[in-house]
Amino acid sequence: MNVNVEDLGLSLDEVAELKRLARQTGKLPPARIEWPAPRPLLPEERALFVPLWPPVYDGPPKSYEEKALRDEADGVLWAREKERISAMLALGVQKITQHASDTRFADPDEPLWVVTCTPTSSRVPDNGQPPVVVRAPDKYVARERWGELIGLVDGLASIDQGAFKIEATPYVEATTNGSAT
Image 1 (cartoon, rainbow, N blue to C red):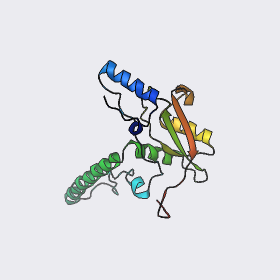
Image 2: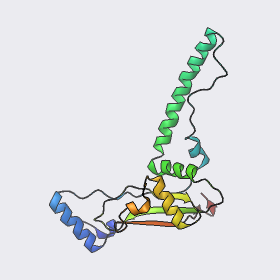
Image 3: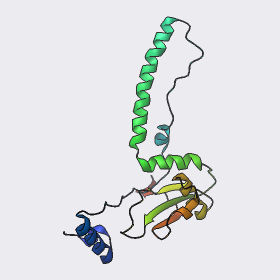
Image 4: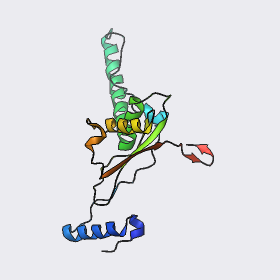
């Protein structure tokens, strides 16, 4: 098995552990997920979370013709709703979690924090939690709110603090060629 340490970004001990696991099980453990840098959702991404269905009408149809027109319009609207749901799900787990954060913690006066949860060594399995931008008054509250987002009912104490590093850092908007993105 040829392992290039520079490509993996692991220490020599971690590479040795991966080789041992590969010899023992016949395969390498799954790779860590490389998440893109988090950011609040753009307006067009937020619009995907607004449902189009069910349609709202002013009372019942007044004639059979109006009922037939409504049924036809319902079919078109339902097709658009399915496309909207597909596009929303295509955003991926990071953006869907970001939507939950943006809607649940929406106080515009609070600063933005990037909360990440990373394994402390290669022996710890990847938790699959994407980094998320959270609004909170300080980094400690940001970490607790992140825990709420991912469903921790007992707070951060329910995560093995030795196995994972949970950090909250101030959000800095990425810039490209001098303009904010």
